[in-house]
Image (cartoon, rainbow, N blue to C red; front, side):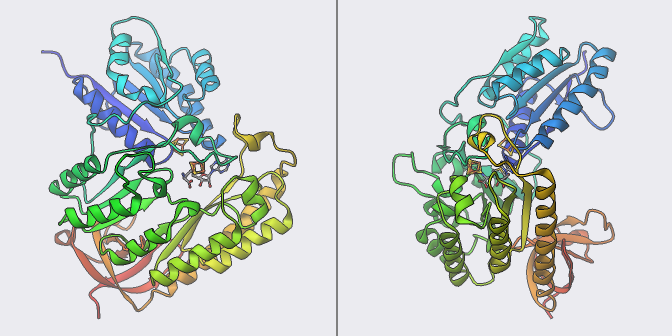
Length: 444
Ligand code: SAH
Ligand code: SF4
Ligand code: F3S
């Protein structure tokens, strides 16, 4: 009897890629492959790539270089590269030319065809290079390998229509396509039946969910559907929200639902209206601040997080000061900060007045310092309070303790025992730090 072949999927980038990697694993398992355990030599290695910034691409190029040795030692190993980087046709061609040991190159829209392409390579029919320019309809019921757990990501839509001028995502992920509410509901119900307690609904812009679906479903309607129809589901989160499309109806619906958590990731990107316009974000500084006020009023105790880019072409010192001021006014619980990075094929890459690297670096350091101080203050403000925590398991790096998240998505570490895992319990916060809260069980 021959031993089953083994696979390894290596993932870069965002949760959308995590999702696609689970589909890749599911498709390979459908072909009889098994996951390669620690130390095992995989028969197929797939790399799921990200191109949102150059650093992400460089990591992939580094890995591809190292895999040359693997191929030399075991020429029968199949090496495949998929994901967003490959969806840029020029990059895909470069990978093909520079890394002859890569057997299979496939775009984000070619995923459903993976088994056929792998078979083609395995049967010795040469290298395969398939990059479809555009996505088709949403393909449901692709097999997926998910590690069962308390929390799961659920994609509700794919692609993006926004074309922010700095961003490559719409170019590599295609136009917005929403899944049918019934398909999403079915998936969430199955997850809950397997023990899942919390789902995070995923999309590049969840607030435009359903726009192209017949039947008039919007994102708020989807939240209501999940609240009403999935009894044992405890928490619902979502990301990412585009501020332009965050409607008053959504705020009102969120305020009336119990399962939807009080945390909104609301990327602002910049604090100056002029820069926001150059970015094609579709809202002004005032629009954003007004939205934040309405959210804070309707959802007391809400935690807000964001993404910010510094050094966008033409960003002046005054524009940057406006970003700093906005960060201080909003009081984010945390922020992902990025230095603007040119992406070939996007309008911003061709804009005049690219900002000097040194200035970018000074600005991001200042912003990080300011945001860190805000985050510490916010976390210290939780000291003495009892917060509801969904216990996830032993704390990483603190193995004598347990950890979980608050509804506001803050990490809490506390002394516990295995029986607590999966339970939602009050934890009294003793200390707030930059990265997490420390506490002890019990509300008193
Ligand atoms: N759809 C989500 C996430 C997009 S990518 C959203 O709209 O928020 C995640 C983040 O990467 C973006 O929010 C942005 O802050 C950052 N980003 C995207 N392109 C970038 C670029 N060219 N340079 C620097 N940061 C970038
Ligand atoms: Fe990129 Fe803007 Fe779409 Fe987000 S909304 S994925 S930043 S184009
Ligand atoms: Fe995500 Fe990176 Fe693609 S952020 S959508 S994996 S470019």
